[in-house]
Length: 311
Image (cartoon, rainbow, N blue to C red; front, side, top):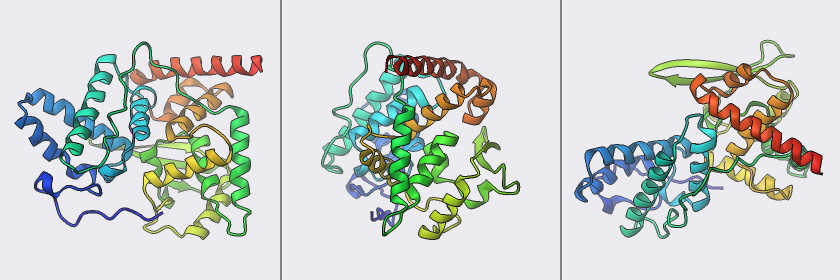
């Protein structure tokens, strides 16, 4: 799939925007719009923070025309279930409002032809548990991914990506930022993945054990795709979402997302007996955010066990 072309200049007015304009280039113009509409500085600051979260989840380079109702719903699910920071009903409601105001503004200005936030609904009642893959679902997906590696034109990327997310539970942004140097092969029987992240302007890292069987798959994929700039996945996050969606369709599964894979990984590790504090570290969560996440993981484990018992 062809990559979007980035704009060659910084837009200075709404008239400069088009469906290919990256999210990051629209925020200051949206701020101007809000101020002109009489919104308070507090509201402008809050809406801006919400859009920055959208940029964190989907990438600040994402073209505004690429957003769909499904991707916005995925973002909202991440806020509640995947970000690792409690999201109150009030904050959730405001963030839905931010999406609706922002995309309505773009649509009214003829920047985009369709308003993807129009169909996004405010939830009522407790947030539902995240959807995860069952052991059977995982086997179906792995079987299809393996078959793609053995076609006349082999493609190892689906299996490399799926196994990586299944085993590590890393986030979308962490996945697209992976470089070859982040794979520590110094102990071939116990390779690790190094995730670097920034906390309060201080760079930290966490190490996640990866299956040594994944390394030959990775090498096979690298030989096929020869990604540039030392990146593991030399493509957009959106393209990787398509890889997961295509694999799910081939395996006759519901839509598979990064967040689904993250929760599936957490449940698998919890059920295997991983120490909760070790799991918290693996997921890169603070002690404060872990309280709610831990509770949800236990509920998901109970639900999956019940489903297996009923089956």
